[in-house]
Amino acid sequence: MNLNAFRQELATPRTSIQLCIIGIVGGICAASLIILFRLSAEWLQGLFLPKINEFGALEPYKRFILPCAGALAIALIAYLTGFKHYRMGIPFVIHRIKHYYGHIPFRTAINQFFGGTLALVCGFSVGREGPSVHLGAFGSSFFGQWLKFPHNSIRILSGCGIAAGISASFNTPFAAVIFVMEVVLREYKIHIFIPVMLAAACGTVLTRIVFGETQELSFIQFHDFSRWIYIYLIIFGILLGCLATLFNKTLMLVIRSFSHINMARRLLIAGLITGAVGYLLPDALGAHFHSAHVLIAQDGNIQLLIGVVAAKFLLTIVAIGLGIPGGIIGPVFVIGMLSGVVLAFPLGFFLDDVSDLNGSFSLLGMAGLMTAVIHAPLAALSAVMELSYSPEMILPTILVIVPAYVTSTQFLGNSSIFTQQLDYQKLPYTISSVMESLQKTGVLAVMNKEFRLLNQHSEFFYNNEQLISTTNREQDIAVVRYSLDINGASEYSLVEYEKQKDDGAMCLTFIPMQGINFQATLAEVYSLLEVNRHGAVYVFSTTAEEIVGVITWKTLRYHLHKASY
View 1 (tube, rainbow, N blue to C red):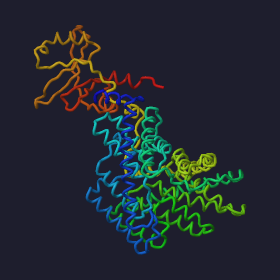
View 2 (view 1 turned 180 degrees about the vertical axis):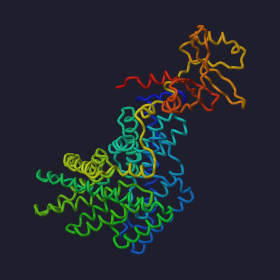
View 3 (view 1 turned 90 degrees about the vertical axis):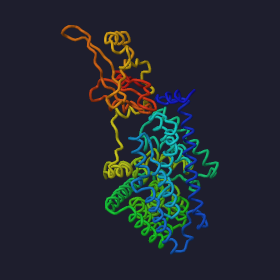
View 4 (view 1 turned 30 degrees about the vertical axis):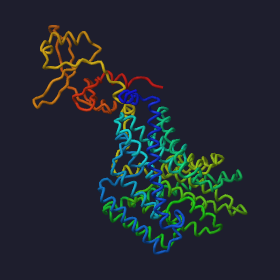
């Protein structure tokens, strides 16, 4: 099969071997980039830390200097690439997928790779899932753009890259698939599911080859508890919903309050605050699960736990709000872990020993807080279950997730932090149902290749009677007139005829046609034809003169109203 036939199959929204192939290749590209990102961060930390993320081993003055130096380096990278390209992370990727078919600008990926690496290395309270999503989408969509695949397939490729990126970052293929469908693409279609699943599997295989099969939370054991505690889980979920609302509102307040300060100064402020807190409380630096578990294991030190929760809350809001390149889910997980243990403490008034509940409530806290912060209950449930290898936690987690989500949304009016960021940045992320449906099909899938191209300057075209005869004889074939304007540019017109009401004579009409690239989808065709709801567009290959097909309004309308299951 040649490349053109391959592209034509990708333009059709159905499961195919071609779609599976690009899912696998895109997943490998994205996962390789994420593995390189992780290795870079770990190698740099290995230069000055005895163990990865063990910031407490540093002397206090070094803990202060490290984030400040990291902020300066991040600002320098942003300056070299251009501050206008300093848009990164999950909200930006959602915007690009909804309105640009997942095309990720190259310079933003450079900022995300090097800036995200420095943020993780220098102890900022950010996660690696933000860079994983951004770089994963870039790595896979770049492959599709290079081969000039239809835009609808590049959009799927971006989803594949995100799934592979998350899977390669956390070794969680199932959670990666759910995250893509629930948070990024926000749709469930079989022809999208299959390549995304394959990409996630590729990410997991590659990350297990490089980093081993150990899960991030395998050291935490979920212990079942008495059924009467299930009642407390509802209260527990409500409290997490309140905490998530406070987190989102405070974060947006910081973003708005510092928006008038230039980016370099914002980054330096974030570095100074992080360094100052890290000087006093090294456990607050970073967003690593194992360090939080070690802190939880210190039985009875509830004051230290509360202090670290408050410090992590502050440092996460400062880092994300002031523009440090990193993800929000990682620190939300850590805050959820610690908050879960703190909120389990009141059970000590009814039980002799609550230490056995620490592991269970830390996992439940992660799921509940993530749900209420980003509004992704399925992704939260699957992520925590897969990270901890604890399928028995499904029922208790549901009892936490539901009240957390309902409290956050209905009673406190809290929306997803991603949509709040997009609204503030004025980046559109919603489209009409008609355009969303049409975006799934490429023009190569429905264009009419059987068209008659007539040159205005040929001898045949001078005879209108012959033109009418041709148009009448080939009613099912589009007749297109080719001509040159006064500047020598090519013009195409759809030729139609109809009988005049007065004398019944045949009247020719020439409807100007606009060109559209072969990578486009039917959404672009609809945008050009919806005003008049008539006419046609021509599809061209490399240049506007290389016409390869025609799509009429009639064809578009038929496709739009075609029944589907």
